[in-house]
Image (cartoon, rainbow, N blue to C red; front, side, top):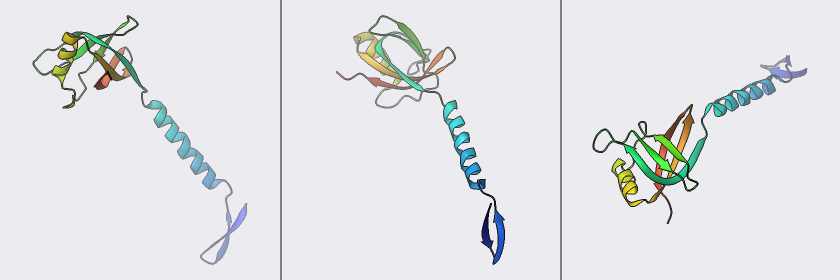
Length: 119
């Protein structure tokens, strides 16, 4: 232990007290980061859409270039003006590729963003 001066008096300073606080903060931060789901991406063509109402899409099915199909949940997605819900139907009809950014939540693939694939 070292000595520190507080209000003119010498007191014993605890060595490592600040280090423990820093380490505790780092551990807490790493736990929070570990709880955040990792974002993943797939690209492909839209082959099916679940649209219960005009301008609303709850989910869609994507066919990847490798031939795999995936179901994506868009019920939590706030569609952007650059990619409105109706744009998915255009992609299905035209067969244009899209890029899907999503997070996995158990068996669900929850879409966080949709983009046109670069041509």
